[in-house]
Image (cartoon, rainbow, N blue to C red; front, side, top):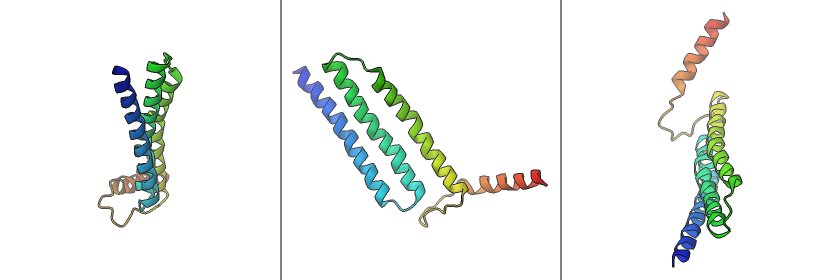
Length: 125
């Protein structure tokens, strides 16, 4: 009985991860600008991969009696690096002048970038 519940739980975790990854891929295709696509590629894909790795970790730990440090390190590495990379890609795109989608309602970096460029001009003169 317990074995069936654990199997079902692991299966649901892996299935949920696969569904989230599929939605992320759909977002990469359908979203209108680089910033929204970056969000789909990093946030949701990271969550999907984390669920899949967690399901694999639980499977090997419970059924194969193997505590996998490699899977835990993979979870940690993906959790830390993917959102940071997405943020840096978005920031680089913004600084290089890639425009926001016409339906965007907020531009939080506009004033900060303007002040930074003015400060650089003043320091350069």
